Length: 107
Length: 176
Image (tube, rainbow over all chains, first blue to last red):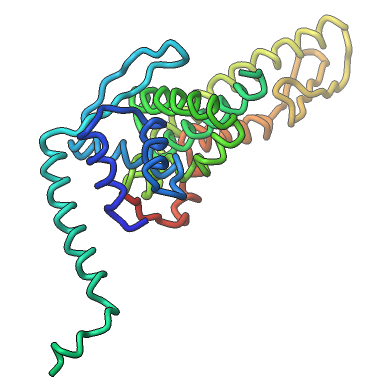
């Protein structure tokens, strides 16, 4: 996965809904992000929290240990906006590369 | 959850904690990270089984390194001062025990009424004690090599000198 994309996905997901590590992995897989390992997502959550882009709280669970729920902070939303803008630029550039030029335009 | 599965998850969390410790992560922070990983592993194990849940996390060393980010990419420094303190404490305790066992040995020699030269080995072993019994009692002994070896071990363990070896480890760029 491209550097920064996972962070953008996490910020976007946790801005929409508060969630915890494993549930985030499941949600991303359900959304079609394949080949995603927990070992990649958990450290990314920790780093985003360390950067102040996520905040967390412990919620007791009836089925096991207390879960750590994350939510995107206002600073995280700003970072998300920046990352999404970069992503749109990249996607537009990718769309342009390798396309066959319109002969009418070349005349 | 089966006992074996619990053991598998517990072992992974302990290995993760070990590498966090090597990366100089403080105890309270390590405890929080352990709890979070344990909760996630618990849910994943219920979903896909303990073996797959652990496999999806990859190496605990890499997970610890990526969790702490760049700081974990730089191996922790050895704690030479702590190592020195452990070494001194170990040396003093062993020397005290050696002296006490030496005195016990000499008491034994005198109690048996032996005469001439009596040799033996006392705790922590690794050296010999020679007692010459005649008109008086002459003793010759040197500090056993075991005392020095155990002192060195205490220094290495106390200073975590092995982290020097991890300095040659590769640096990974965190994704995210």
